[in-house]
Length: 348
Image (cartoon, rainbow, N blue to C red; front, side, top):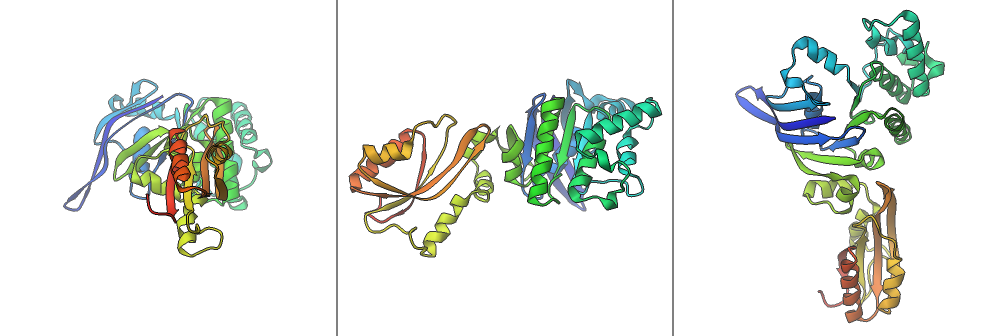
């Protein structure tokens, strides 16, 4: 559905040239929910504006459903843009228009009759669960309701693609979750391709199939969400994931001497992480029996991402020193990530 090839975008800031995008290439499949994540200044919002040519690339190719937008006339480009809806962090609603008026606005000049527009707007408001708000004004709505209006408006021209640029950043966690569930529903029921721009890994984890991680105008990691979370390769991705996991607290807990966390003499404190989708064995109990060890679970943070369990546990291994080494090797052979946090024996 979307094919970006060698996208370059440069700006002139005084005498200095800024490379906002550096040879970015991405292919996003029809019906996919694709995430693009990065810190502020990474280039992700610049990239999403290249998809609909609101920001024209300095060079490169932008193909939407097989059509290269870079080669189109202004008139043809306007028509192609109707295939691409967009929602933003601050909603961008017109305060002087009702909810109905905001959603109906993109249909001006569409050739639809007043009755057809009325029918379509009400169908869209029903889709986003706002049928009872059609006569309300934006000032009378909550943040989540405003974003639902913005989503309905973005769908008015029956787009094939919906671009979401930090659309949940101004919302509280509960409202964010409801908007993400709405996007999943739209993807499922309409088959619409969704591109999610965010700086929050929780958003990626919640709804995306694949993710591109951006830094300094380039894609530094790309893959299925499960694979990226389970076994991140780039330091930036590892930092992002660390912010979403309770397991990252263990180092500070050890440093603070929290009771029950620091291993006693002869014990090993380790973090075990899932790295594959088909973990079905009861690995901790099997390891304890197989190697005659006591394994005490200190922390656990396991959730379903991409239809499979991901996360891990922090454990204390107690028993014969050689058997602990054998257990660690056994777990690693089972493709479990094992990070020794503190070894209270002789160091490995």
